[in-house]
Length: 107
Image (cartoon, rainbow, N blue to C red):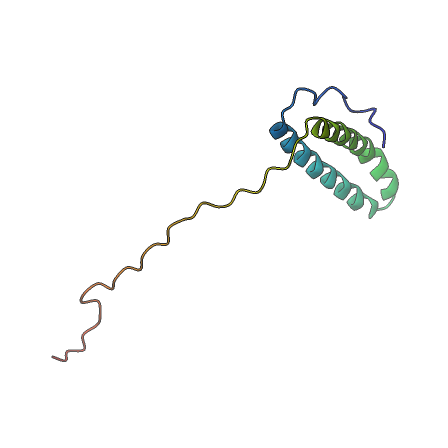
């Protein structure tokens, strides 16, 4: 895949957290672009439209992914583990209010 459409120096000053966010964003963009290309291929002349409208953008995204991955490896970055949700206290059951039962007139 050509990286002619990507700036090789773009990610040099990124820290690992920024690179992680960028890599995820690029993966989402690439998937979206590939989805658009697949959708375009279903129409009349779709293969031509798909290539003309979306291929260059996809090549640029793949080039950016390559440089982001290189910076990721160079910085010896690691994925952030998913955050575990904080333990939320379970609300105590509320006692039934006195007199909440209906009286049928029996005493």
